[in-house]
Amino acid sequence: MAIYTRTGDKGDTGLFGGDRVPKCDPRVAAYGELDELNSALGLSRALFREDPALKTVDEGLARIQAECFIIGALLATPAAKLGKLAAPFDAGLPADAPKRLEAEIDRWEKVLTPLKTFILPGGGRAGSALHLARAISRRAERAAVALGKEEALPENVIVYLNRLSTWLFVAARFVNKETGHAETPWTGLKG
Image (tube, rainbow, N blue to C red):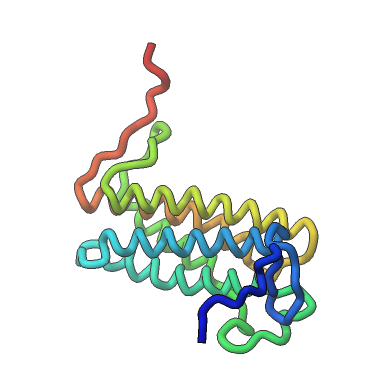
C-alpha cells in the first residue's frame, strides 16, 4: 500500500469526519502549525535527550509533544464532529495542562537569574532549538486564534498555546544555564 493517496493533488485535503477543504483553509493552517511545532520539539529533544541533567525538560517535551498531537487532532476536526473522535482524542486536552505548564515554569524560574533586559534567542544548540520552538508555538497560537474567530475551539487550546510559548522560553533559558551556555542580552544597535 502506497503512503501517498493523490487525493490532495488539486489543493484540497480531508478533515476528520470526511469534509474536504482547501489546503489554505484556516483550520488546515492551524493544525499545520501544530505539526511544525511538534517537529521542532522533536528536534529540541534530539539535541539533549541523553543529558541526565535535562531529564525533566525532556520528559516535559515528550508530554507536550503528545498534547500538541491531541491539539492538532482537535483543530483538524470540525466542531460538529468533535463528539465522534475516538480515544485518546475524545478526552481532549487535559483541563489541568496549562496549570502544569505554569508549575514547571515557576520551578525553573526559581533557579534562573531574573531578566533585567531582553535576551536574544540563542545559547547552545539545545537552547537555540527551544527558542525556535517558542517562536513556532507563537505562530501556532496566532493560527489557532484566527481559526477561533471563525468558529468555537475546544476549551483550553488557546490558553495552553499561550502558556506553552512561555514554557519554551523558560525551558530554553534553563537548558542554556544547565549546559553552561551564556545568554546574550539585547543591548540595542551599535553605532
